[in-house]
Length: 493
Image (cartoon, rainbow, N blue to C red; front, side, top):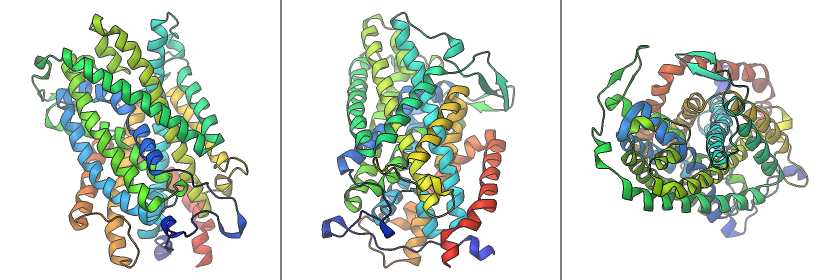
């Protein structure tokens, strides 16, 4: 039985578009996902997911609570770990252009049990990522409405639950209504189709990149170098035994801001809908990662230079930084609009990714077949899209951004580490496979990527171990009572 848990999925060479081989369509005439995405659209999907909560929300949280001005180093550390993982993702996505991301890669290299575990952590990643960003979106939307004299009362725009020293507390609020509404609206858009979603995303990405460049152009003029001193604040130990600042705080902040990099992972979930995945997936993954890392470092330097880092721990740190400068109040409104648009695109990409992971798992028999159904007209995994939207909206309406963000980072880091290990395993077990993109110096890059991701995973795990173990236990129960017995691969074997 133990051996059967680690049964691996056979790899069939994928069709190559440039050679005129078919890549669309399925066996026995079933409806399949539609291949419409180009390299440019994949790059924009990555940028759409990466640039969002990281710049508009997480930068301030990480600086105020953990790293101080050294949050700049935190982005460098997280970006380096992501670069290793991104190279591994690029090799897999070009070689196996299918939906499912790290789940599909683990199934072909490490076996079904590991694939299920990674698929379950990806649920944690994408589902809660959409909820997390929706909470940030709510903060900027309410700030913008406040400038118009139409602010929504806190009781209807704040989380009713909060996590304080490991226990859940009531805040007195009823629901974060704006967060619920934005998730519902974007779920409807994703339901309609991938082409429409990618087109809307391209417009939104253009808007938010322009807004960020405007902020850098004007905000850097108001940077006070004294706000960067000390660059790494002294370590502080809180009453509950946790600590922040110091080198340990910089590393802890790296795990927090890692949340900002999950966008290139989302690109890989769309591999089954790319026109020429062998060429375009590496461009989309690596291109968006490099572009966004540069913007993150510049943005964190500007924010911590414009005002003391201790004042940046809000749900809208960019707008908060601009409030101190009357000459930039016009830019505050522009930034709020850009953040509203930018965070919307992140939610869109996350809500696109999760149903497609469910789709892959359902096709393998590990999830109920309803998740594998494709809409006859829109050709999207519509049932999974609706279910994901309902759950994400519920989480966004109930929990605060800091709690959700830590859990997202944990799921992301585990998935990234698995992909890094999987590349090395497949190099040894299937050297015959065609690899349109190869990780350079894989014997060095892959282990470094896995170690870096697991080390960053350990940072939030020390605080939230009981939640992570509880989530894992639920997932293992579903696999034991459903997935194991309905596995199509095992039935064929």
